Amino acid sequence: MTATESAAAVEPQLERHRVELTGYCYRMLGSAFEAEDAVQETMVRAWRGFDRFEGRSALRSWLYRIATNVCLDMLGGSQRRARPMDLSAVATASSPLGPPLPETAWVGPAPDGRIVTEDGDPAELAAQRESVRLAFIAALQHLAPRQRAVLILREVLAWKAAEVAELLDTTVASVNSALQRARATIAASGISATDPVQPLDEEQRALLARYVDAFERYDLDSLTSLLHEDATLSMPPYSLWMRGHADIRQWLLGKGIGCCGSRLIPTVANGSPAFGQYRPASDGGHEPWALQVIEVSAGRVTALNSFLDTARLFPLFGLPARLDPVDAR
Image (tube, rainbow, N blue to C red; front, side):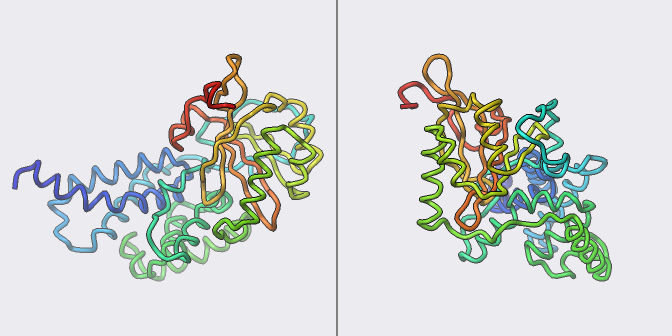
């Protein structure tokens, strides 16, 4: 078999694991872009070392070992990614916006299709989506890198302690100890995943339809009526965030008034409904402004997470570069 034929035979075996590996690396790194870089490096290392693999372990386990080492290398010395709620106290609509922070400061959103496998039973798919919620990804960032790997492998991916010990070249006792410490750290952080993810039902679809209608008409009375009384608004790369109807409404009618006339294009991020937000442009079309990730609980919107890095996020989510005037109507 020639080198070209060998590569052609190996690549499909590796590629079938790409989505689950990207989901794993995303949970480890908190960034969809870094996760894709990590998986690409994993694939390159696996392809180069495939002739030495010889089936000594399951291919999937071997790939996770490589991916774990890549992630641990990438995390060495890096700061913890966070959400605005982790970095500053709650602000008000009159608070200064402050300077933008670098992309490396934030837990970023990820498209479900890049990090959640499509096959599996409904319970498994729900568990996958639960484990990529923004709040859970933020919680994972509180853990030391090896503890993070242990928690994800044991509690998200349901690996046995012996399997994790083999992957990390350590003992079962060490894995169990790391898992206990990881659980304690997350509990002490006060950050946890939100309500269990369920498929969108008619009530939730109707809520989202009312949200889109109210936002696009910029009817703030209707919009705030859909928000939980403790709903939050955040806007990475800015650390400012606020809570409650009054401040969110005041912000949208004040410093955020440029959002008036926006159009929303639906997508999905982190197991949650999301929208590409386009603000009006001078030519009558609409230009990218934010990726909104919407958190919903008990029939109300509990969080509006607006990520403003549209230059990278919109291509990642397959959203249009702009809406022409004919598209905007």
